[in-house]
Amino acid sequence: MVRNHHRDSYSGLVTGLSERQHSFQIGFDHGDIVLLTYRIKKGMDALQFIMQIERAKIITHMELDISQSVTEELDTSAILSRLTADTIDDTTTTEIRNGAIPHREGSGSDRRQLDGRLKRAIEAAAVHHFGPIAAMVCEEHLANPEGDLRTIIMNIAQDAGASQAETQAFFQSISEF
Image (cartoon, rainbow, N blue to C red; front, side, top):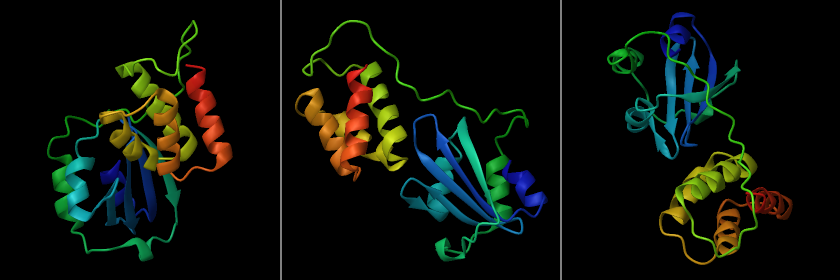
């Protein structure tokens, strides 16, 4: 995709969300790559992480002026050669499954253990309600969870800067799990 945008002299921004709910951006100016971000990494530091993404949901924003976002001058040829060095073919899919939270039968307690499935559901719901920044917030809170489930959810919402309505919707998503 990056190679094609370069060849087609594309101008605009490509944003993506990986399967792990990490966001990235690639900015183009008439085919030249002028912006690379991955979560909080920028420029060539971001490239090494972008290269590890196997599947992502991609959105393009054509003709979006990204000149104010450019923080360093990037070498498009070097980036393209690094991105395509390990490419097997052009058939890589860019779709990921819907991040909907599965419903679990039975009643649960707010003190239940955070298994891997519940952690993934919390992260998917947080990203859905609060945006890509929530993946980073969840990573911090779910690595070593403190408190009961309600406390963890409230801390995630607070750190993501959620409004009261967003927090309620997020909590409802998890309580249905």
